[in-house]
Image (cartoon, rainbow, N blue to C red; front, side):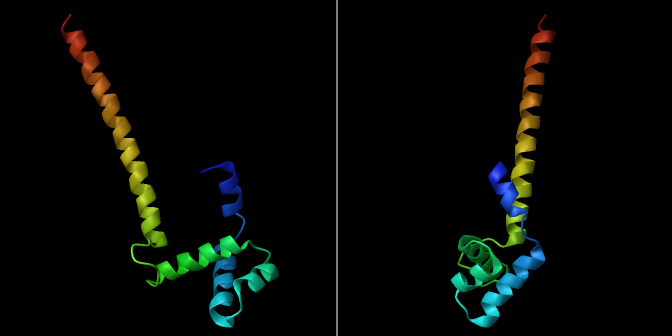
Length: 102
């Protein structure tokens, strides 16, 4: 994650995001009105709203829920660690094969 991304993703609490999404759902007001009132960017609120819809099972086909995104990140991280382990073991096998030929 970039320094820019981490700075701004930590700015708002989950409770703040939940309340902002509830304003969109319950008031029927336009997102532009709500973002001015809350002081957030329209893109942020739209992203939070779309993610909340996906988490409720109302997202677009194939859209991942937050839990699925977290699992995907975890699995990608685990996959990278396993690929590194395999590479170390491969290099060790080559090294020891050369040593045993001496």
